[in-house]
Length: 265
Image (cartoon, rainbow, N blue to C red; front, side, top):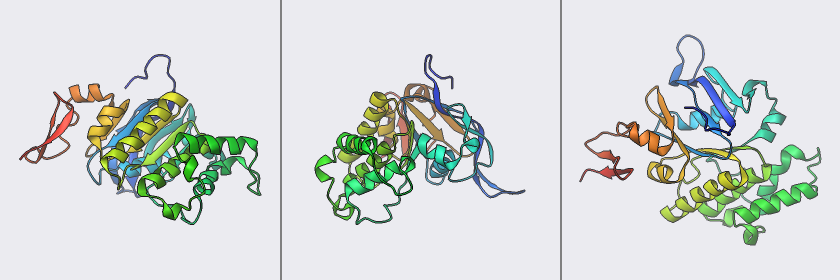
């Protein structure tokens, strides 16, 4: 899909192939994947279980090698970026809980400043400002001294997002940020991500099973299917019929007139 006028790609791929294994018989999940994420946009990666959503996210983050093709952060190939530069350019929020939930919220969020501190990990004024700003944006300032093990799932998820915000990268990647949350907190998290992207200019891409919510709140969606994908705005994808074949029609079907999935009763 072409990039909207006057917007630069924060991340783009060319003929990306994702999967597992090397050699003569790798497991390829998606092939020929090419898309561009403009600065300040919110993008969801959707698809059925096992199609490769988390694999794609880890590949985009450089945590897992691509089987082919290229990934660019701005105009720089991801493979040309040393780990220190990657840490300054992109932040990642995975589904795993923090290594120690005895950390306070402030201590957890402070870990986002690690790429910028000296070898002793000392925080400067710029670091403290970034941490305070992240706590404020994610509405955690009143919880900053609470141990992470006392937080609800929604509060912990906001703390992990705040850690990525404190890292102050232009690109944020999140794996299933609404897992285990009720509908209200799912919406709250996704609307928060939308506000971050649109108000700060950060580019955010996340995986999710909440396709209906993603259609309503995201600028772009990447729909992963068996070995191929579709990318575009929600309206473009609805018009192209990209959601109609995701699930068996005798169980659940997509109604393009309202942009929602319906259950066959």
